[in-house]
Length: 344
Image (cartoon, rainbow, N blue to C red; front, side, top):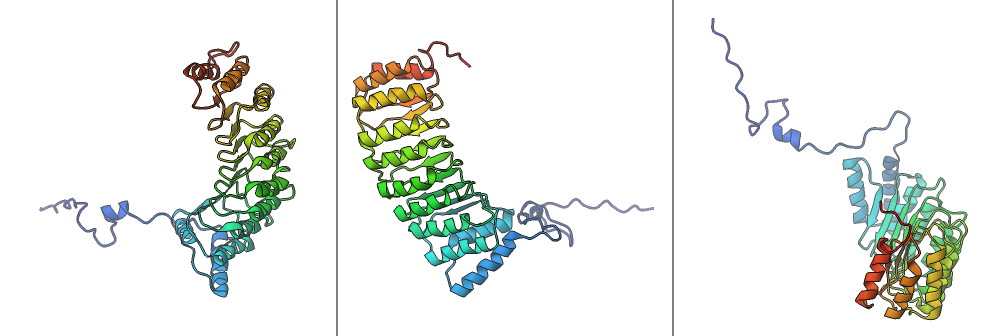
């Protein structure tokens, strides 16, 4: 009897038989979509899409490209926790977006980042409206970078992040917004009673000498949780930096302080308060004092104050000191010149 021949192995490069997945089809399948919700469970994303579409049609607002990208990512990956905007958008369309999210109590965003969009204070108002909703959205990372904020936008943020506001946000970045001392004053009204924020970045915000006292108000709050404070590129000068350093003395959670390029010098008052801060706040271990007018003599005085201290990790003073002072500074912060500091 003749036996049937075994089937010829098919090349993965040939088309698949009817009903049989091809080699390439299995490798290039569409991304898995968001899993279906259990019976009775509300799909907030679907609710948001419906509400947002209805509001867009009602107010005849244009599409925001970043929102289209976010929705596409949601469809493909099932989630998008960080909502990022990096191009200009229609102000009314942006307001409709956050009102729609608030209306459905959408609670699946952990980061909101608005970078160089020229949204100004109105973009802050729109997002704060969403952050003020009840229950509070679980947003932890909030950024408005180079967005044209003024003191008014800072007032909106102060209200949202104040004692009766949002308790979820732990990172606030407002770099490159020239709101100056007036904005710093408004911001401090809320942040001086905030016990959740851990990272605050106010770099290149045109904060002047009078603004240092408002930074100090934030740092001196007895429940202040700030661990990182970045103030580089402002105009604190000697009066402002003295205020900031005085406040930092009482900020027991603070670990890192960046005051690079703040136009202060090594006056006796500045050196004295720096040495006092080194000694009395042992949680603060990283300083960036560079880019300021600290002479070799001033740097040497700071090094002498650091020698008996074991908690200092990195202290950047200035690039213009002598090689001997620089090596002494490196030795002190590396632990070689400290008694009692054990190597790990």
